[in-house]
Image (cartoon, rainbow, N blue to C red; front, top):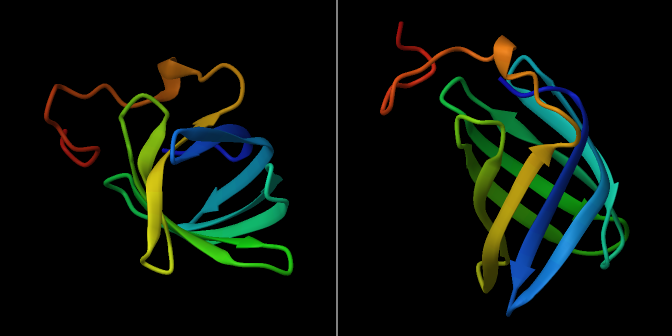
Length: 118
């Protein structure tokens, strides 16, 4: 479902859009790890994903705070969701593979279908 390799992304807070680039993710057997850089600093990601496209990750800034990322695959390659810090601050985020997504390798789904439907 998700390709490992280079990704791009952003998060929003109070009208500000922070870009995450470069960004690298590795997806295997329901686990996701990654690393990158944004205006706050260097960070790592670790978490899980499932067959329905749900992703749950912790973004750990080097020597600083953590951010929880909860998102869902949109069926076309992007993960959209909500980030939260200590249950006090939150905002939207989006993550997408960086480069061309080979849609020919994705499963064909009808509107409202889940990835497990045949």
